[in-house]
Image (cartoon, rainbow, N blue to C red; front, side, top):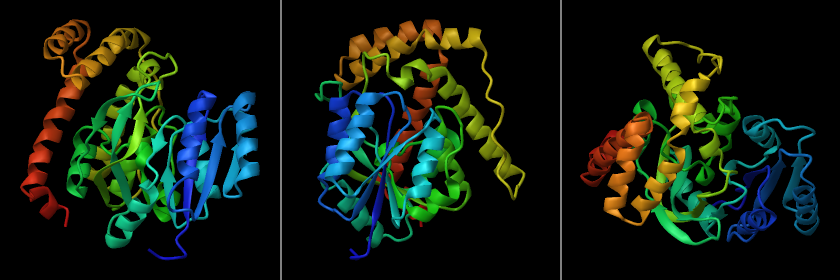
Length: 327
């Protein structure tokens, strides 16, 4: 580890409950590696509770930079503002209601020093609910080859708030306003630019799943996320097949409202399906699966593709094929 290493942590906030935001911020403040600048980015200037919270933290920790947008800009533009401010040689992502393990940043920094060919690094994670109770675990694929196969054929595999990467990657790729799909778009463009990825097979993060709250973006905008995932893949395919020198511009983001209604009718059942999976209630899982299939099979088709490809790549990693292909 080099003494001069400086890490910029981007922590966007919008409407997170104060107690969860405190836990998220505290988990970064209390990191074992302390050469940090912690950039708190509030994208809701009308939220007085969070504005006061930012003021409080910036007064008690000189490493904290508080940024409050004059108006709602959306997550991509808010993250780009943080990227512009960041002065660290590394940039780490963080979400406003999740928790980082106390040694997360130190271990990620050490890994990138040992493996300088890697540009962006994630970690496995525990899954917790709104009350902080452990409800599951996320085990992601580790190798560069596996990550790129998932990006190319399905979707993103690295857990975005665990991202830790070289500043040059973030400053070159930046985020685009690919609504509810900005992380996938960011990472697949990084792939197109020749960057390399890895995931640490260690749970250094706690992802909070909003099981019942309507605040959950993944529940409210699942259809937009699904459609834009298809658009991201289409752009990448066009870039590769046509050997373009410039990546395609952001497409027009329009949606079929009737189709959205059909797709969204499955969302509450999908949450139940995930809970049954975590709790290993097989009969209940099968029953819910059938109910969803009768409404709209697309959400299940997508998840089945993720499951099948990830299992095949997991096998490839275990027998070291994926490791060899990553070199």
